[in-house]
Image (cartoon, rainbow, N blue to C red; front, side, top):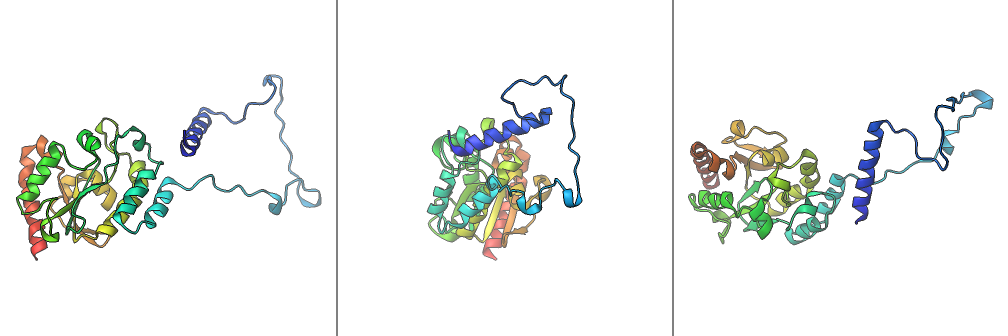
Length: 264
């Protein structure tokens, strides 16, 4: 059991007890609260004050930096993608890591002009350690192949680079929680800085929430926006296209817009 887990588990247990109304620790000997009369200490001010001077009150340091702050420090020290992947692999503050088989970092050509950001790994991605390799991933490959681009492209202009907001699979493929997104966001920001694409494609609501701070993919898709100094195109997630074929027309329009922007 890691120290981080010890702290988080103890903190959660303490917060739960406080919510139940616990306001005192267990003493060495039992106390009958029905026989004890509450006594309040009367504070005295002035020369005979019984209040400790400020200088004598001990300063209690913070227990630990937040997970997002720790992630920011770790990500900031990464000078290349290999270092970033290693940093994410040893980051133990996200509980999703404990239930995942593999870290899903990225796939494709790091020099690509287009960076695709998905939501989180699914079962197939977790098993293989690569993003977008299941049914939705196969559709994603076909979509970008239609405009002459692929993760296997050897040149920046015909290649794509693919990653996710979350590198670990959430249980039962549920949506990542806001707290989970927040703690992994520093790694994603650094990932974007290191790849330095011309265009970012956000696949689905989770990616939009992480990068743009808002959801509503039906309204947002097809409209260019800017984030981190990059052009950003929100699109329907390929999984949504598999569920609703009518959305493929919108996706095709978005792909053509990306192609036109890259040529322009």
